[in-house]
Amino acid sequence: MIDVRPDIRKNALFKDLSNEDFEFMMTFLEGHIKSFEKEDIIIDYFRLVEYAGIVLQGQVKGVMLNENGNEYSLNLYYPGDIFATSYSLLKDESSLVQFRSIQQSQILFVKLSNLLKEDATPIINQFKSSLLKVVAANNTNQNKRMQVLAQKSIRDKISIYLYSMKESSSKIILPLNRQALADYLNVDRCALSRELSNLKKEGYIDYHKNEIDILNEDLLDI
View 1: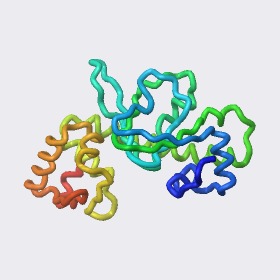
View 2: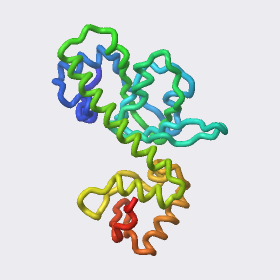
View 3: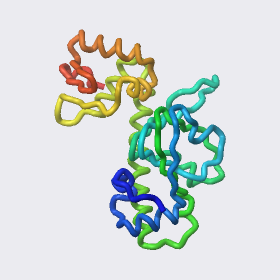
View 4: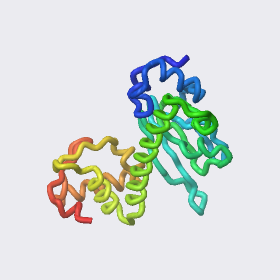
């Protein structure tokens, strides 16, 4: 039996379930938790994937190979995020993505393909509804990432990213540290720091740690 911990129960997939229903779904989905050290491979290239992973602690990176055999960062996953969803549902599809832990991480694995072979109960239907919402949100975030990666210059990548993060205030609190942001933008960390410094000197932004203040909206005119 999986301990009903707050970091699991806060996840969008489980937050509306009672403790009893949560335990039922964990048994039904063959849920289990594994720990990984930094740089451990969680799911390797070209492997069949039985289980989707939900990050409980740490951070996971998904990487792919380009036509030259070089790796590039596809996505980053933080506590609460789910990865390998599609592969776990399509049991005969080998993964084109390698998922690895980029710091000590704890992952809850769930066998989502079990949802496809069972007569639906109200609890299972509720979980399916939550899963669809999570998958839709993940796809939206992935589309935003693709828009960022499509930009040629580091400045344009920064601009697109800040535009996606901006709400009503000119102040943006980044959820990523500098290295994680460089990974997300798929750029070198030193080059990112240099471009941020240039934007500050040119009066477009001011920043301190992970807080960025947009001083000139022309930066976001995309």
